[in-house]
Image 1: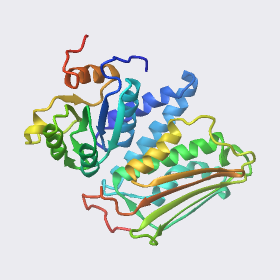
Image 2: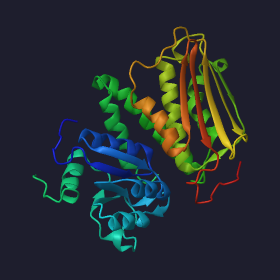
Image 3: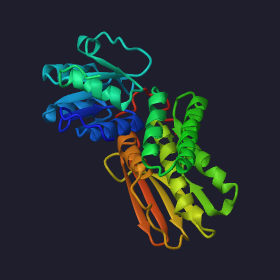
Image 4: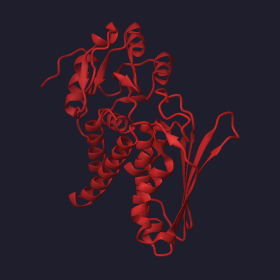
Amino acid sequence: VSARPDGLAGLRILVVEDEMLVAMMVEDMLRGMGCDVVGPAGSVEDALVEIRGQHLDGALLDINLQGRDSSPLAEALRDREVPFLVVTGYGRTEIGNAALDTAPRLKKPFGLAELMDRMTEVILGTPAHR
Amino acid sequence: VKNVLATVQSVALQTVRQSDSLESFEPAFEGRLQALARAHDLLVEEGWAGADIGELVHQTLDPYRSKDGERVTIDGPKLTLRPQSGVALIMILHELATNAVKYGFLSTPGGTLKITWRIDDGDDRPQIRLRWIEAGVPLAKPPSRRGFGTALIERGTSHELRGRAVLEYRPDGLHAELIFPRDTPAWRDGSGEGRS
């Protein structure tokens, strides 16, 4: 991975994803952008520990963790003003939780370019250049 | 498994990353895809209730045993894992078997494998200890680079099984041990619990 937008390099990004293979790929993509990866956390409990324990610049939040929705995490991130993207597979995407339902989404499977664009928009707050 | 496409994407991208050529990509990717497919078959057959460790081991190793039945010893009690752990274990066993073909007991005529698992009640909570012990491998050496396979074994054990993998390359073959709690906090749906 060669593309390294300066704005994203060095950011501390929490990855919350319960599927190991997907987590490994996302971690790989983030490292390629020069981000500092926190986690990956595979459960609500583990993710809460990470959210409470340190400064985060952003998070990628899988909407469903082992059969539970990740509303508590969305609320914790919102309360701390940490920008995050909600990552969805297929299946139910409206959860009935404001913090989760109103957050920007990223649909799996996504590629590196899409991830960089969405992170630039949501975490840096600037429109992607493409 | 809810994100089949993203899982396949992950396997493809990471296999590309460690492949020197299309020729080496193809068998590596196909093998991993087959392992994923086996995992899904098994889980569907079991009605997504869980996966028996012995069945996973047999699924992975029987193709090698049929050629030369004496080389592989399999021994352990019936133990059911939650589906996602079952998928992880199939992928881990696949990587161990693939490495064995390249560098381990399946790369040499006298190589053997003993795979055993048991419950260890010694600690505060029961642990499953799964051992993969290769022997008779002259000049056994670790894979030349730490690739996706090794990462998958280690991360699969820590992330999905919530335990740890110890890979020890001894002079006559790999000794691998996966140690993970029997009841993971993640096991919530209740189906299959206590079946074993």
